[in-house]
Image 1 (spheres, helix red, strand yellow):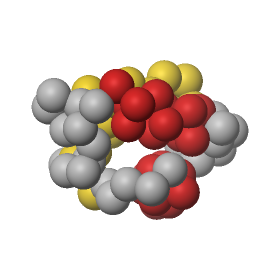
Image 2 (image 1 turned 90 degrees about the vertical axis):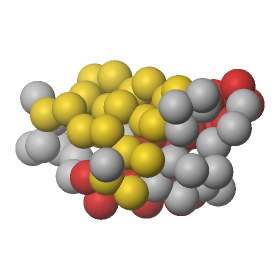
Image 3 (image 1 turned 180 degrees about the vertical axis):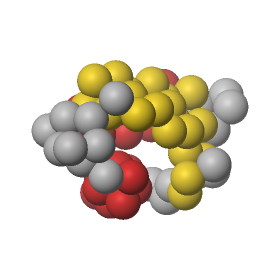
Image 4 (image 1 turned 180 degrees about the horizontal axis):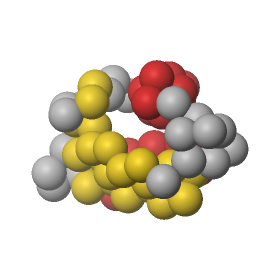
Length: 70
């Protein structure tokens, strides 16, 4: 398992948190996704055999937000 933190500067509320976590959790290999709107960060634990960091960034984009690895 690998844990990465991503900066999500346009996340600002509980709805943003829910939307981002929902989209990231759709990916195979995600063990845990925790978005923090106050810190504007997303922490994800995942299996690198199933998902890569770029897939997580793309999932955040699908949710309507921008992310980059912190």
